[in-house]
Amino acid sequence: MEENSVRKTVDLFLIGGSAGSLQVLFSLVPQLSASLSFAMVIVLHRGNFSDSSLSDLLSSKTPLPVREVEDKDPVQPGNIYLAPADYHLLIERERTFSLDYSEKINFSRPSIDVTFESAAEIYKSSLAGLLLSGANDDGTKGLGKIKSAGGITIVQDPETAQMPFMPHHAIHHTLVDHVLNVREMAGFINALHGG
Image (cartoon, rainbow, N blue to C red; front, side):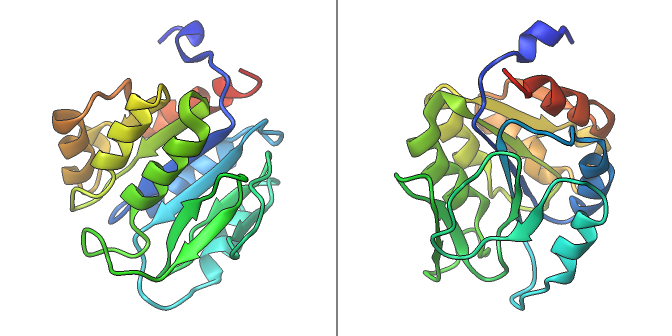
């Protein structure tokens, strides 16, 4: 992959995942640049109970600030945000977060599609979305919205996913720009740094 192929201004980088994606994050996060020029939001399917230990675990692997989102927090570059358990996470026009407790989508709350679709409306072509391992089709519609808005769409190589259904479904139902293995992801994200 040529570095120029990933050069684009990105203001927000989204990561969505479900079963099997936590191991990917634990490998990926330590390799990220310590001074990302954009914000990163992680939406993971989790149990219904808030577990702050996940943000603590991710924090221990990077100098970047990591924390769970609170309602109305502004989206700020250089931060890693984690969608809280049992809430949908949306991005509002003012580039602030909004938490929502409406019905589950794809049996999930937070829903990856909800976050990806709302961010695509606000960030348009300055958005990138990465879909990781998982066992349902959440995230495919959201990636489609990102692609339609001019953003960058990436999925984990299903061959490397513990649960390949989620990235496989996205590849077959929407336009995906890049299919990356775990080792390639950090280089790709760091290459977006500074656009």
